[in-house]
Amino acid sequence: MGKYFVSKQHLSALIQEVTKDKHHLTAYDLEGKDKMNFESINKLSDNRVLELPKDREDATGTRYLLKITRYILDAFLIKSLSNENRVYNIWYVVFFLRIWRYWLKEIIKEKKEFSLKENWLTSNSYTGIELNAHGLLILLVKCHEKSEQFLPWLYSSQPCEKFFRQTRSMTTTNSTIVNFDMLDLLYRRNRIQAIDDIVADSDDSFVFAREKNSKMGTSSRSEATHRTTSLIELRIILEQAEKDAIMDTSAVGMLLREHSLKEALATVSLTLHYSRGLRL
Image (cartoon, rainbow, N blue to C red; front, side):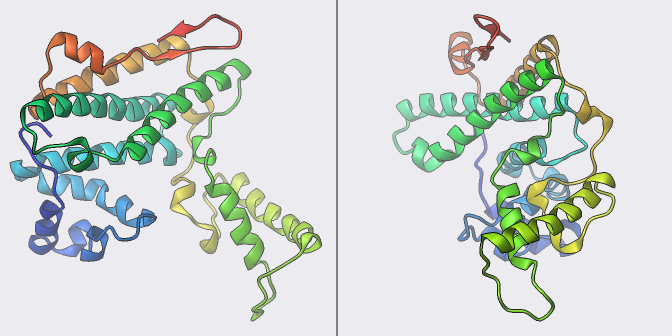
């Protein structure tokens, strides 16, 4: 990443040099064997970790990678975050990654020892981030058209998985029977609905311990999530995210010529059902 390398060795050094009460990390969090271990990546990108290695310049690249990871998670999972901040977070990441990828491709032409496969994100991860960023904009526009609430933490497979976990757990005390038929599902559905209604009516201030899941969003909703965002506001946010991404990538040494920068940062466009297309 420009003048710096991203390495888990920086985090290993942090674990060894700083007491656990400061960062809450363990060696297990760095192993990476379990690709579905959400809690580890959530801890690694926590603000506590981002603040600690600031005095080490060699960890700058690692810190930026964890920063954009935090931005991705917050954009979809922090319920109190305003819609404007959600758009800024995810699109700052997209612009940052586009510049990083384009810069690395230019370096590869000169230095054959580097490659996108070994020195960058996987194509699957990058494509997922791009799709989520575009999907966030499309959903915001649709919610603005229909004056509906925008609740991105529900746009995933997690609510479905949570529902089936709940149905399997709705058994009598000390019962080991977890399988059920369709009639049982209909009976259990009413109990699950009652639990969800209590949590929703209390605006997440009352949560059943076993129903708590950080993948379903954290903290309570604020009034900002009830307000939709106009196209003019989205344009301003995207321009600011692009400007900040250019500034930060330049700060770490990923400098691109003007024509290369324009090529790396493609135009963001939305096609709406009532128009031929609106460019942001």
